[in-house]
Length: 372
Ligand SMILES: NC(=O)c1ccc[n+]([C@@H]2O[C@H](COP(=O)([O-])OP(=O)(O)OC[C@H]3O[C@@H](n4cnc5c(N)ncnc54)[C@H](O)[C@@H]3O)[C@@H](O)[C@H]2O)c1
Image (cartoon, rainbow, N blue to C red; front, side, top):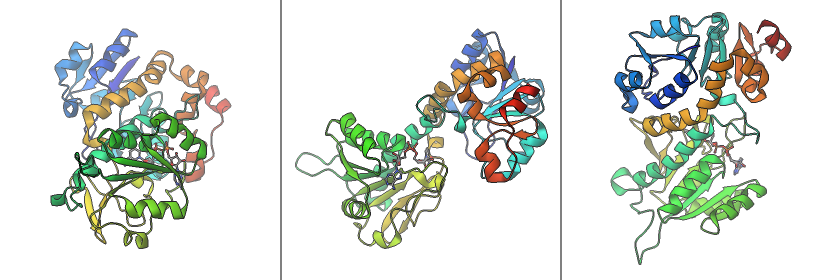
């Protein structure tokens, strides 16, 4: 198969679908790889690095679209991109179709077979192609929070780890999932006093074991939330209710009970945020203040560290990507986790949540296999 990889064109997107290391794997599987010139510039990988890995370089995105059997990307295709997709071609990337009727229409019209990273599942019921970005965002949340806590940046002027003779900062992480656990690990590593709040008792037990007493765990109630948030220097919002908007766990009224200059990092902002006063910000202007509380609400946090994020993403996407390149539609038919990733195929919506959200009829597996 010829596998193509494009330079991302979405604003401030520096990640790339294939690293040179991933290219070597596809080439070792006997595939041709075509990389758009400059595709890896955001991660410091020039065309020479891709050529050394066995790829050919395409001068334009149009070349990659017209000559590739499968296209590997990071972000959802933009209108000028989906117009160049075609039937019989596989698209493997993040799509997030449910809130995006225009893109869905575009993909349906193209006839492309589109596998969305974010809906591929694993044996443990997780979303393995989404998890690496949560890991990055969780760890980055503490760096962002520590910076915002500095006085010149509007914060209380407190060092997370304290120093000998001075107490450390109190960090409260709401939601002990992937983001939460990675945030807690970074905060604890810097010497902060860390508490994780979650509404799942089994999860709190796991976290208690994982951190061996180094991190406090608290069951999520209104009372407990208030108590912890009022005492916090830094609060990380990391809750997720799958398929739903994030619950507004911290209200505007509660801000008045917090310490002036405390910092909120609302990682859950991509699902609407779990603080009533959150609104999405960008890397170029990441924070704002409400009632003396600094808010950091960047919706695409991993974009700040494209080298790490690209590598982490490639680690997670490679196995299924190789399966798609090796076996095409058969890989989808034979692997229910990859099938969960299939969102659109030859003009039909094949994902029940996407069909439900946008009012399409969902195509059955039989229908997919018939045309395969
Ligand atoms: N801003 C970004 O750049 C960025 C990047 C990656 C992930 N995210 C977002 O971060 C959020 C968390 O992602 P995740 O991968 O950690 O999800 P996850 O499913 O692994 O964890 C969510 C946790 O929230 C807990 N929870 C749910 N309701 C709660 C409540 N009322 N009180 C306390 N805990 C509650 C769940 O029990 C679970 O442990 C998601 O919204 C995700 O989309 C944002």
